[in-house]
Each structure stands twice: as C-alpha cells, then as structure tokens.
Amino acid sequence: MPKPVIYLAFANDNDAHLSLLKEESRQLMSTLSTLHDKQAIEVYREESTNVEDLIAGFNRFNDRIAIFHYGGHAAGSGLRLEEGAAQAGGLAGLLSQQSQLQLVFLNGCSTQPQVKLLLELGIKAVIATSVPIEDAKAKDFSFWFYQGLTVKKNIENAFQFAAASLNTKYDSGTAPAIVEVRGDEIPIPGEGVTLPWGLYINKDHKDVLNWRLPDTPIQTFMAQPSENYVPNNYLPKILGAMVRHDPSLKQVIEEVKSGKKDRREVLPIIIQNLPWTIGAQMQKLISRSDSMRTPGPERLQQTVNTYAMAARVLLYVLVSQFWEEQRKAKSKLNLSYIKDLLELDEKHAPFYDYMDAFTKIGAHFKQNNWMPFVSEFAQLFEALEKKDHFYKSYLLLESIREQLASENLDINKTPQLCEEAENSLTIFIGTISFLIKYKMVAVRGISVTSTRYEEVSFHHKLGSLNAADSAYLTLDSEERPFHNYVESDSVLLVDNLETDQINRFLSLSPFIIDNNAFLNNNQESLDIYLYSHTEKEDYVFTNVNSQFQKMEEHNTYTVSTAFEEKIEVKDEVDFGWEFNESTIKTIRPYEILKTQFDNMKTDLTKQ
Image (cartoon, rainbow, N blue to C red; front, side, top):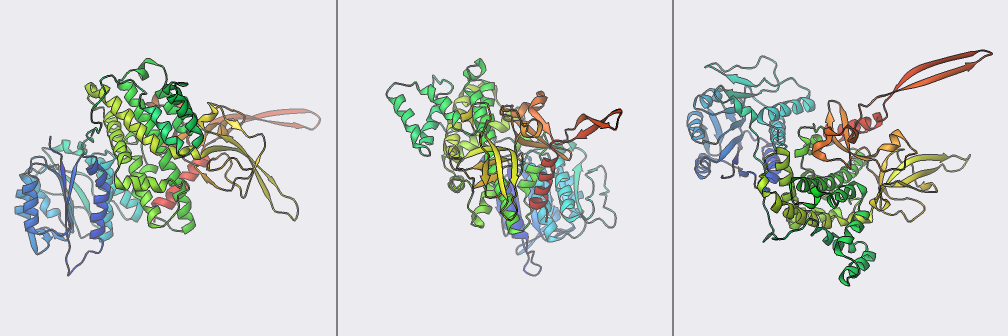
C-alpha cells in the first residue's frame, strides 16, 4: 500500500507578513520528520505555495494525501496564496478527489465558511477557524495537534490535546467543541471565545475521529537472515565495543579466541559491566527459559524491552542535565517533547519515542555549546544526525516496538524479526557501551559536620547500582565526602568512584529511584524503578525487572507518587500513671518525587 502523504502548504503575504509562519512550517516538519524517516508517512512541504504548486501537488500525490494542512492568510472565500488566491469552491473540488483524505486543516483566519462546502463534497473532517487568529497561537495550536498525532493519539484526542495545551500556555478561554455536522447549519462559537478552532465532522464519517497515523513499517537491513539462527548469537559482539572503553576486557576476547572460553561465556561479563537498569533486561534475554531460547513472540518482546529500557536511560540522563542547565541559565522553555514525556498516560507510553526526544534535546545542547555530563553523548548526537547504523538500528527496534504495542505485528515474521532485532540491539548497546565508564550510585544517607568557625562538611552513604554487583546494593563501608551536598535518597551518575571525594556527579532524580531508600534504608537488594507514565496528577514508576507493556499485571512492579501508607503512632506519657494512646498517621513516601516532577514541568514546559 502506498505511504500516506501529509501535505503542508504555507503562503505568506508581503503586505501582511506573518512573522511566525516560517517557524510553524519548521516545527511541523521537525515533529513529523521522524515518522517520515521511519517510512510510516511521507511529508511534503511547500514553503511559498501558489495556485500552480497546489494543483501540481494534488496531481502528484493523487489518492495518497491523508491530511492537507494550510498555514497562512485566508478567509471564507478561499486561501491567499503567493501570487493569487485559491478559491474555496475549486479547492474543495480538488480535495474531494483525494480518496484517502482524512482531514483538512485550514490554519488561517476565519476559514469556517469553507467548512460547509467541504463537508458537502464528502470531506470527512475539517479543522477551521471562526474568527481571526493570532500568529503565535496558530503556530502553537497546529504544532501540538501534530505532536499528538505522532504519539498515536487519534484525531479527536490530538485536537483535544492541542486545545488543552494552548489553554495551559495562554490561559485564555476554551475551544469550540468537536461538532458533528448534520444539516446545512454550521454552528459558530459564542462571543468571547479566544481559541476559535473547531473540528467539524461529516455525519457520514464519524469514525474519522478514531483515525491515527499508520504504524511504522519494519525496514529490515540484514542482507541475508541466517538459516540456522540461534538466539544470543549476536550479543557477544558487544564486548568488542566495550573494550574501547575498558581495555582490561580485551583479555576475555583473547581467551575466547584461544578456546579457553566459549563465546557465550562473555554474556554475563557484558551484563555485569552495564548499569543494572539495562543489565536486568539483558539478563532476562540470555536466560535459559524456553521462551528466550526460541525465536518467538516472547523473545522478540524482551529484545524490544531491552532497547526501550536503554533508550529511557539515555533520555533521562540527558533531561536531568538539561533541567540543570536551564536553571543555571534562569530561562524557561516550552518544549513539547518534554511536556509529552511528563504527561504521558499509560495508553500512550508504549508509543513515546525516547530516542526522538533525545535527538531533539541534543540539538539544544549543540546550539548552546553545553558539554554533556556523559561526554560521549556528543558523538551520539552526530551519529543520529548522520543517520548511520546506530540510527538505523534504532528505527528498526522502534518500529517493531510500535507494532507490538499496536498488536499489529505479523506473527509469521517473528522468527526472522528476532534475528533482525538482536542484530540491531547489538549495534545499539554496542554504540552506547561507553556507559560502562560511568556508575550509578544511590544516596542512602547524608551526615553533616558543622564545627564552630570551620567549613561545613557533607558526607554521603553511597551504594553502587551497577550490574557488576549482582542483585545487591554494595554499600560503602565509609561515608564519602562531597564538595557539596546532594538530595538525600537520590540516584547519582558519577564518572569516578575510585577517588575518596566525589567532585563530579549528575542527579537522576526523579527519573530513576532507589525504592528501598524511600521504604527501607536497610535493604541491600537492588530495587530500582524508572519513571513510566502519569495517572491524573501523579507519577508512576516501573521496576527495571518488569516488562514495559505488562506493567499493570504485576502491581509489585509499579509504585506511584499517590501511594499512601497508614502507620500507628503510640504516644506514651508517664506522670506517675500510665496513659497510652495510639493515633493513625498517613505518610506519602514518594511525595518529594511528585514535587520534583512538578517543579521540572514548571521550568521546562511553561513560559
């Protein structure tokens, strides 16, 4: 089936120039570009559209246009293009000939009078405006609408998301409701409405509200799959990439070459050198269970889970530093991909593209000349920009992940995809194997020494969270001095644990947490949770050992900032007689995490 086309047409006016129109064009192209690269859709953009361009575009993409978007000056009579105008009647006729057309988005002033004619000619849905609109709001509304579509929201949900997002930023009224048009009358909003967009639905095509952008096709890139593929055949190659960052591992490779070790024996060594957040998922992948030793659906799902966990770790490290850099700069940004991350609901979390967000935030680092805490991220930004093998491996794994989440994967292709996915995972983990140079540590307590007339000293009780320590937290026998204090109960990323004093660290709170620090400081088992999604006003975390798509099946694998615990508190007073009374106290052990998330959202998603 031919790829659907999103046709973006923009036209400005020298006499009434829209200063933000080019920015709207750039933003929409940017937010849709990843889906274009994944070959899920084709995005076609005309920057300075005239009537001839429009006619040629409709002819070129005949029966492939799924969404037609116009940005620029307009009116009820038509669209004001470069060197002339597109008359409403003729435009409606051209659009009605596109058999795959789902939506027409007319992002210009007072386009609502065109709705009636479009719907009469069979157009399924139209987003139009009832009154003149502000340039900035037009840019933001369209951007959030398409941002919603890219995370698998349907047309209805994406429209509601865009309206709510604009209200959040501007606090200026409500958008018209979604309107099903049954007769000749096109309802108009009442006076005082400041968000004038309406989504008008043809009464014969109400199902268009459920339309979503199509799943990403799986673009395999192995020349010839092996006829005798055995699971875990590719993963040992990761060790070769690790040697570049830890030369001591070269001895293991020499032992494999000499026959002293079987190549499968290197798999536990690879896992032991990775952060436990990733190592725990890989440990499942190499287990001796039948489901993991057979190229089938469960094996494929776990391969994708391992990739998704690694992508989440990369993004959370980068966002943690990005938050710090923004606070240092004392500036606030309104970044939709971070807003999407901090407002993910359970339904859309499996479709959130962590690497796409990583790429976009990386662009901010490059623009501001910020040095990433993980210095190797700079090379990763370049690899993603050049779209090399790392980028291709990410696209393949992400497309499989999307089809698994949509339950649209062809089960007959599973055996071949298991090999493709493992090969891609090997490239992905091998490329980010520089993470073995860094260590995650949990802060289990802070002691402060304040001697009169002397500088205050901060000492931290730390425990290593790396897979090299098996499934147990290795607590330092001595407290470590820091040049400053950090948050108690946080998880840190450090680049040197050999020195007595920690001078360089990055707090990963509230994205990655040591659960026992909140519930039982004496526990030495590894109980690491990562931020997953939101539920109403609270934030949900999943255990690194859990399966991402099945989080709700195992309540012990999730914790929420909404969690409350009631404890009995006994008051004892002795004034010569016994007086014992107990009261019930409610505590919320994760409330500090909610506060941190809310503060981050204020800093990074609101202006």
